[in-house]
Length: 155
View 1 (cartoon, rainbow, N blue to C red):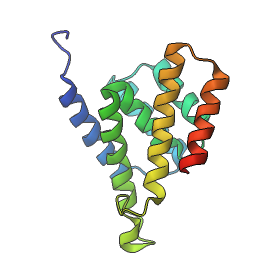
View 2 (tube, rainbow, N blue to C red):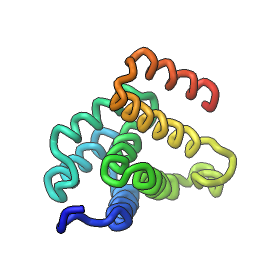
View 3 (tube, rainbow, N blue to C red):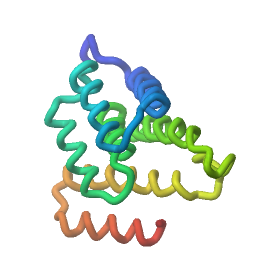
């Protein structure tokens, strides 16, 4: 580890704090939230390069599901590995779902009924698998086939 590098636990804490705040005060559609992430995480915090952010957006746009949450989970994966993606994703989802009162207590993402939270987790797993498969050099056809099978079986 280089002298200025933060330990993984510190990075995960930063991810959770950032995505709790973004989920709480972020306003607008997915494009606005992704733009805010780019401005803050590339320009202000320096967590990612512009190229990494563009790659995150491109990969997540190719997947079905909520773009801003998937980009957030992918960024969290790059910054904190599997547990960073898990913690950052849930922090973002948690705050966003707490603000949606339409279903009362059922709108809570961990309500045991599955629903919204289950699909976001599936999408995050798909994105992480896509990255891992691309690093291992597996064919694009095999990656897309695996994603389709998982989404059909779980979704």
